[in-house]
Length: 391
Image (cartoon, rainbow, N blue to C red; front, side):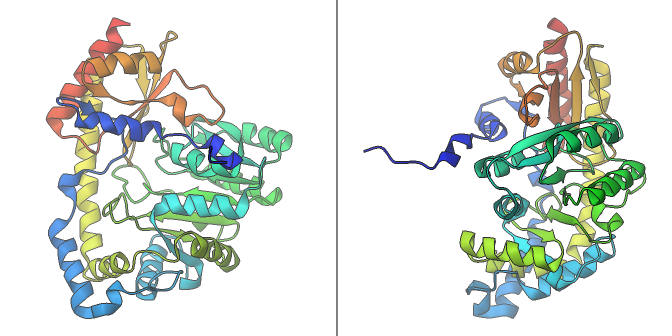
């Protein structure tokens, strides 16, 4: 017998980046592929203390079922912490999720009917495409420049394709590293409001700024109206704890709660309490400046090495924060073909094709600098430079 799979499974694909991560097990490989935080920066001692607090203070309740919406003390802390950073919210505006990836899946579940178009930046985050594809979404793509999504193109795309909602990563965008300017954000929100379209703002990197001026989130500029905001502890604490959150108007949260109940009942009880105690002790506010300084150094090492080793056929965006450097190839070079040559030299990156929802992007590639030390960064970039120069 053949299992009668649902039609939506035809659009489920293996993650290219997850497949590339398997290369890391190979001896001598230097990987700039994944968007991984550095494990040598994880706060092992402080998080161990927080886990002990969860058992010592909360007792057996740390191992019991809990409510779908999330642990209230952690939600109250987060609301205060986020409000100081411009994302003003109350507990009824916030849902804790198993990573922000689950938030994208739940939002797709409540918003996307088969054939609906989702407006996205071109390029856009691969994980969002993977989350929305099983709900049979199609994509209305809008080109970007150094200031973010191009507004003139946005208006044209909305008129022609009538998308259901807009998905954006406006700050230190994955994969491009670009931050949308304040002027563009205001224009974007005006247009979406006129067209009665929600914005889904994905902000996993916004807390990792080391240069330039902070730009208000779309959620802040909109006063919390018409914007669903998602973020995560994955980039500022640890990805392994799988804890993210959604901030939105109460009616949106209510629909997401129903979707989450069907998916997994609730976030992890023990982890929520441990994160609460970690934050309550002030460890989070100590840790973020620490990792920002470390990632700033790693970005500078990579940029210096690229200046020395990359040929003139490669140009790139200089980030002010986040985790990535986005490169564009000239003279018809193919990132897919160069990747195959790079792997032979034991260095990996991600070709840009996977970030383009409707195809294209073979002249682009993404480099991650956060998960490598100085020696690996300089050696890996030098190897890449030789590969790029030979073509």
